[in-house]
Amino acid sequence: METFDDLGLAPELVEALAAEGVERPTPLQEGAIPVIHRGNNLVAQGGPGGGTMVAWGAPLLDRVPADASGPRVLVATPTAEVARRLAESLGRLAQATGHAVASVGAPWVLPERATILFGAPSDLLSWVGQSRLDLAAVEALVVDGADQIQRLEGLESVEALLESLPGPAQRVVVTLPLTPEIEDLCERHLKRAVHVPPRAVSGAPPDKPPARGELRYRIVPDREEGALTLVSEVLEADEARHACLFLRSEDRAADVGDFLALHGFGSGRPGDESVPVWLAVDEMEARHALDAHEDGVVVISVDAPVGPDALDRRHGAGRGGYALVLPREMPHLRDVARRTGYTVIPFPPLPTHPENPLSRLLARLEEAVERDEMPAYLAALGPLMERRGAEELAAAALLLLREGGAAPEMAAAPVAGAGAAAAGSAPAAFVRLYVSLGERDGVGPGDLLGAMTGEAGIKGAQVGKIEIRDSFSLVEIERDAADKVIRGLNGVTVRGRAVRVDYDRGTRERPPRPGGGGGGAGTGDRRPAPTLGGACPPRRPHPTRRKARPRRVDGPRPLSVSDGGADPGGPGPLSPGGPPT
Image (cartoon, rainbow, N blue to C red; front, side, top):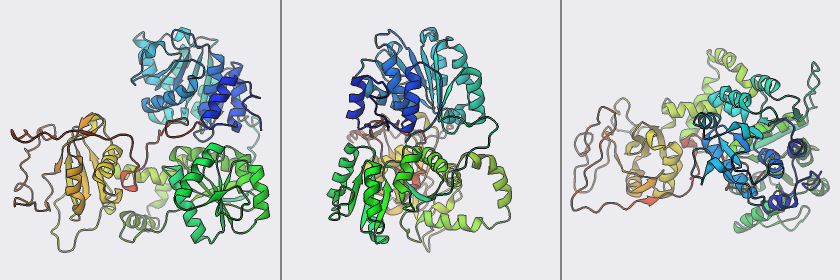
């Protein structure tokens, strides 16, 4: 494997990458960096987990002068949020070269004067129309995540940007997968583009590698927590003596080792019989230790394999094992496994209680598989299943079902003896709370779930359906946790707005409050009726009551099954949450 020095990057960039824990180039970076460094057009098939941002960001920082007075590089991303995160990520490397980095729609100082400007394609075009962005001076355009852009807003804005660029400007498209529409776009606008990895010869059937086994994966929101959970599971359930963890860098290995040590798991180099956990960075070095201990060792990729060779060295020779991936890394893992000949299968979490809402939903799904209507739905999903895995589509369907409010089986069963709830109200075991923030305040289900679990200290499983409306939200909460949420969230600041939480007037089974007045709708609820817009006007503060002092909710909170999953955009590969890839 080549080093970043061998790829021709400036020493200050190599040092900056090493400081971020990026010590060795991935296969995508090995192929892309020289091409971009020479100024050639590029079509790269890769996604988060394969090192995409460093693949185009490092050579552009090395090639484009830092003393420009306006944007010389444009980076089109799926959303404005992804643009902000990627800009922050690349900004850490740009400090070593003196380049100014900014994104459209985020608070940056003089973004019009940044050398590298990030933004959603439609936002960049809007700046062009406002004469805030001069495309005539642009030297390179990077379309990062073209497949997601196609899915979210189509390719029209991307094509308009490509058509408006000066002829000599470099064009780079990063996508996974390379859809027919994106391939057609590249053929028309990226002349003599280099493909990484190389394309198959036209007309030749694609090479299908021999089947090499199965690789189980688990999608996790946090690598260290995921590693701890999986290590404890496999060392107990699989009766293994050792767990060999593969990580991207020595720094990452040290961090994971320290985290495991806090929980009592000793760690060391591969082959160390005195510790239960082996930490491996060099695949070839670890392979010798694994070959010498064929039995009793479970292999876990804490960082996703960067390419086919890395995957085969870690999990080949019949070792199988597990891989931990962030949600945004699934396309990368699936692509690498396909090119290597492995079948990836989800590794389920620990068995859940039979009364758990998720368990009930899974049981309902298993029953639905046998229904006569299934073939028609399978036929309709055929084109999507060619591009996405069945488990990904199933998870996405559950997410949409959850957001649409059509999943009553996810709510807890009614309490025995309780009266039937009115149509549209929460089941009897839950109560519905009114939250004074809605869609126009920029909040989503994840914001409210994070505030409730973080500030009120409840579990995600105690939260039911979260319904975001225009100016307010309705949240179903387990009855026993409702008062705790009201006390914990009132006055908290979410997305810059103070929150007011109370029982929704439509909740019939409202718990009694001290001092009486705890009846159902219309008895103990003094909140005014909804206005024509559907929102309830805020209460007038009592003249002698002190106003609650807002508390800030800092940072994102982890999501649970009840929230519907993480943001598909996710943080950039070099986001503040972790080192660059």
